[in-house]
Amino acid sequence: MLEINNYNSAILKDISFSLKQNENLIILGENGAGKSTLAKVLSNLISNDNVKLFGENIDKISDLKRAKLINYIPPKLSIFDEYITLKEFLELSSIENIDNEKIEKIISLLKLEKLENRYCKAFSSGEKQLLLLASSIMHNAQITIFDELTANLDISRLKEVYEIFNSDLLKQKIIITHNLDLANALKYKILFIKDGKIEFFDEHENFFTNENLQKFYNNTILKLENHLVVNL
Ligand SMILES: Nc1ncnc2c1ncn2[C@@H]1O[C@H](COP(=O)(O)OP(=O)(O)OP(=O)(O)O)[C@@H](O)[C@H]1O
Image (cartoon, rainbow, N blue to C red; front, side, top):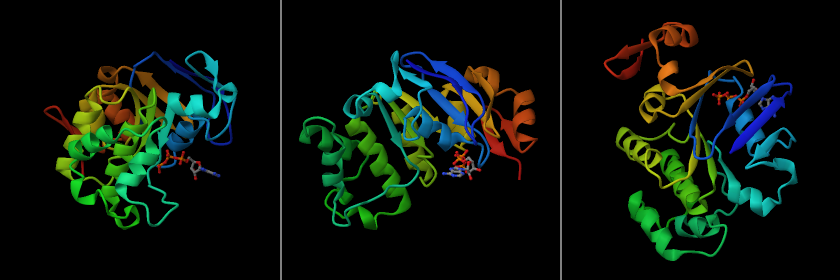
């Protein structure tokens, strides 16, 4: 259960909504709308007393407990140790004991065997995003927020990530994306933010109507069969 009440800042305006336990969410909105800022507020990277996690005020929860409850995955991997390998990164992603069997399973699931003992700093953008996904599965928080995880993934990787999002491998998920086809296929609840304000918060089927696509995307999106494509 996640709740935010009347959050205001220079960027976000009167933000209130709640998610039930295990209810997943997609956050949409144009560049600069406030999506990443909202994610940082929800995970207390921007500290506040407007968010409640499972009934408790986020700023009153200990760091360890908060890490178990919510995990923000940023758009880009930051490496503080240039000699850290993928396997070592995954070992550090566990909150509790290091589970080597789980690490091997995740490496195999995401087909990362070739990268296992290589230094993360040299990974391509897409490989770094797969590492972030693997790390989030190791961390296994109650709620994971992905900020543009799929931005650099090729089509077959995108499909694999879609399947992971569609499975129960991760618990509750909040996904920030510009990929409307992914948002449409996942069928999560939708939150659309514009200029720091929530313009839409409801079920998926009420968002992806031709009327809304016109309203929120100014005729730049076409619905072809059940897919959304950019009208170039
Ligand atoms: N630390 C900051 N100080 C000042 N302005 C900021 C700061 N962080 C973000 N902003 C501004 O707040 C607005 C919202 O930024 P945010 O990163 O939340 O947008 P976004 O919706 O995630 O965009 P994008 O889709 O481009 O990633 C932008 O105009 C941005 O320039």
